[in-house]
Structure formats: C-alpha cells, structure tokens
Length: 287
Image (cartoon, rainbow, N blue to C red; front, side, top):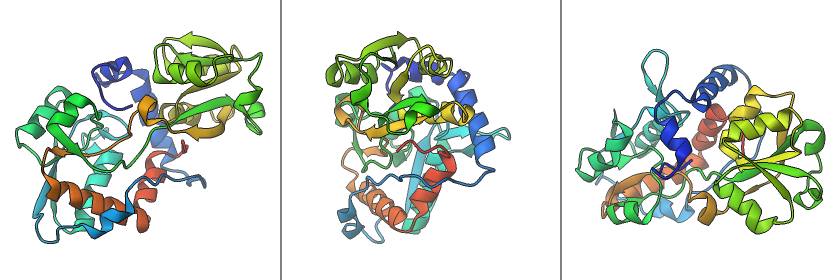
C-alpha cells in the first residue's frame, strides 16, 4: 500500500478507476452510517516525541496530498478533498494550534513539489525508499499495514497457520505476502492470482481454503462480503517485507515541522482522536 512506481496495484489505482477504488468508496459510504465495532487499534507513534515540540516556531504547515488514494485522500462525489490523511492533517494542525492548508497535486508531481518547497509536508503514502530517504525525512509511522489471513467464517475461529497442512492458500502473485508465505510457511500449498480481489473471490467461492495478503485491502473486500469470510489469526507486521507503514514526508533537515508532527501524533493517540479516525475510515479493522 505504500506508494511506489514499482507496485503494479498502486500504478493502476492512480487512475482512480480500479475496482478496489470503487469498492472502497462504496464500503465507506455504507459503513460510515453504522456503529463501529470494538477492535484492536493501532499505536505506532513514539511517546518520547511529546517532549520535543518546538513551541511557537511552527507558524503553519502547508500539507500536500493527492486525490487518487482512497480512503486516504480522494475527492468525494461533491468534489471535496476528503479521507483519512486529510482528516489527520487537519487534526495535527489543530493539536499544534497552528494554521493549516491542504493542496492537492498529481501523484507524479507531489514529491517534486515538496522538494521544491511548494509545501512543508506530504501526506500521501510516499514509500520510505533509499531514493526518497535521500530527499526527505519522515515522521513516525501513524498506520502500519500488516499482512493477515482471511478464511471462511466457519474456519476463522481457532484458526492457526500450523493447521494449514493439506490446504491451499491464495496469494497475489509477485507480492511481498507471497514472499512471506514462501519464507515462513514453505510447506503450505499456494495458489497465485493476478489480484487480491481474484484471490478473495476464490476464497468466497470455495476454490481455496484461505487467503493471505495486505490486511487493509482485504478489509474493504470483507466489508462487501460480511456473510462470507473473516480475518483469521493474528496480524503480521514485517516492515522489511510489507514496508514501514504510512508516514508523513518533510524536506530533509526540516526537523521543526517533523518534530511538531510527531508530537501531534502522540497527542492524537493519547486523546483518542487517532483511534476515532481509524474507526471512521476503516469500519472493518485490520489489526
């Protein structure tokens, strides 16, 4: 889910017309009207960051984002810029009590715009790669993206990867989650699919016994298939395989803004605002 030109899912999703994008928007429309279900909540911010806010030295933060990354940043039916990242940027500025602006850029121009001082921070899922690390510094992770198994509802309770002998697990071909299965569960039979949706649909139809892949993407499919399947077992966090998670990029050396963002992330977790945003935008939790 971290945004890299090497990720074919993200490359196609940037057109804003993939089935995942449409499914996500439909799921959000339905889910936001209903009550949130108790679920594990993320906590990734460094609590030591609460001590390092440079008070008074950040007059404003100019956030840059994009419009092609639902449910994080996209335009709704009325053309308004909305999403988890949009709400988070506004909450950060409110917490630090400073002015905040949000400007949308095309994805292929957003990082260059940040490097050219067109903004102070980019909140759009930019991946932490060596190339990006040479240009930018990054905030603490505010949302990691684990891998998870999905199974049919009758098989989810008491699920254990150790009991997959003789069963078939669906994965997206060439994905980090396929490499996870090869590394940690080499004896389990795997069936490759061209997309996450194709694999999950095969699980729903009984063609495979379980699925393993990106938990956030699976959460939207589960929202559309509530009678079929459930997350099964634990969430797996493997930064070297699945990425460091979602962070906010700032120009290299801009510690003042980065510290203010990290400080705000801790405060937003402590006062419940970060949990509120997670439950709002991800009604089927993936932790």
